[in-house]
Length: 265
Image (cartoon, rainbow, N blue to C red; front, side, top):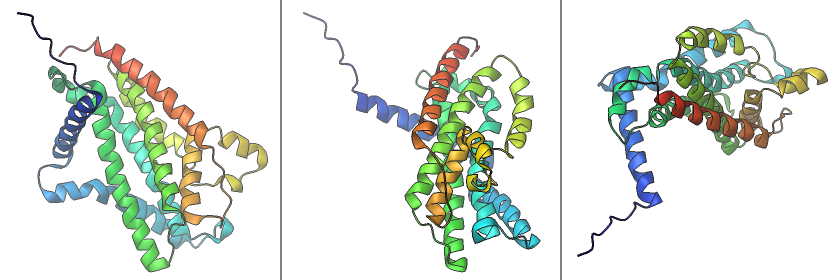
């Protein structure tokens, strides 16, 4: 009697398994970071709302006008929210593997699963905060998004950039604690050039070309195009950002695979 070989699982089956794994990891991350009560879960999106709102109110209270006649409150809040997503993912990257190393005992859980689950949770929280702000600005100030889809695309690309960098940082943190000490400083220094608090059309022509070399600037310009439409000029190149996202992810996944061999679980 011939032994029958079990059929290989289909691609869809593998996808469903990994989706369940990532979903379970997201729930675990929520419980770890915010506790098991509902108020703890609310902090997921209350934190970015409070920080973004505080920055917007401070600049609104300063009474300074903005190029293009933009409302300072809306501009600064919508600028800070995407950067909060970027900063949150990057700053938590050094502890992403170390804090969840015991999970790697399970054969179906990989380092990439752990990182993706954390980043999807971060993206969902910031996305909820952004949607609530947009509803508030629309209802109170009459400022509704011109093309919501472009805003969502800009946020997704920002998430992709941040995740690619986070994979590299997490892999490097397996070897040295230097990343944990430098990432917070680096993100604060990067805030000034990331594109969160300026628009490309404000800059001289030479500086515009320099600014557009930074991929996050394109994401902010894309978000603002989705918000303001043609009220103000915007500059962005989606294929350029996708190229960055692809390269960072390929390097990050390769780095994680190599770092996995150095972990003792």
